[in-house]
Image (cartoon, rainbow, N blue to C red):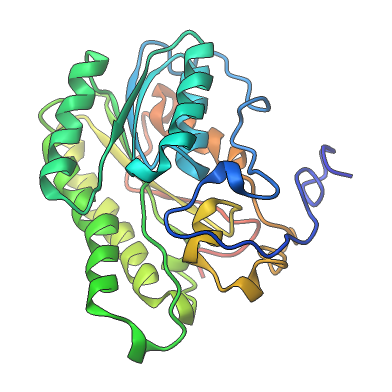
Length: 295
């Protein structure tokens, strides 16, 4: 029944085959390949003339946001790890088919200099910067806290938290009044899984970051909000984000009994970047298949 309007069956609702990739993985090698809106998202100029930078824009939720932004009339820069070049080139092709500008900026957000320089490079290449989407993240499962290494902790917090701070600090030199910052947090901020303890801690920190910054940025006429996805079918899951035994029934424990597809989050990212969200700041939007974020 895939393709119907019933949310239980609107997208793929079967079991996934086990499939493991080395981190960070490539979306184009997944089965099935996630729907990021390449064909399914239809825009109507909600972001006409805007300039956006999306971290982790090569695959998954970041890819869906980048594609939707372009289809809504924005020029888009994406950052990604060099190993993800093949996915990034696909996104560039989709964006350019819409008639919008696509800028590819590979690098590692664990490198503070790259993270800071990235903002200025994007602004220069796009000719401005209205929207900053802090989406890139590290998620690697570890079932036993005794085996959680300092290296993994450092990498996870550096990408998921420190780079957010570094990039916002630089972006405030460019974001105009009416600008928007969107942070990808997670249902894990509210319902942490034991095997994702470090990831969940960073996602909780991002919620606090958004709320704390909303007051500061409001004085500058800039909004900041977060999106909290539930279980969404992305390469993050098969490249160390979940144990292989969890993959077949991934997402089926939600009230909607399936994993989400990245395109199902696209409209929320568009809303928060658009002028329609002029009275929305400091908020967390759950797109979780029914999993609660406010209990």
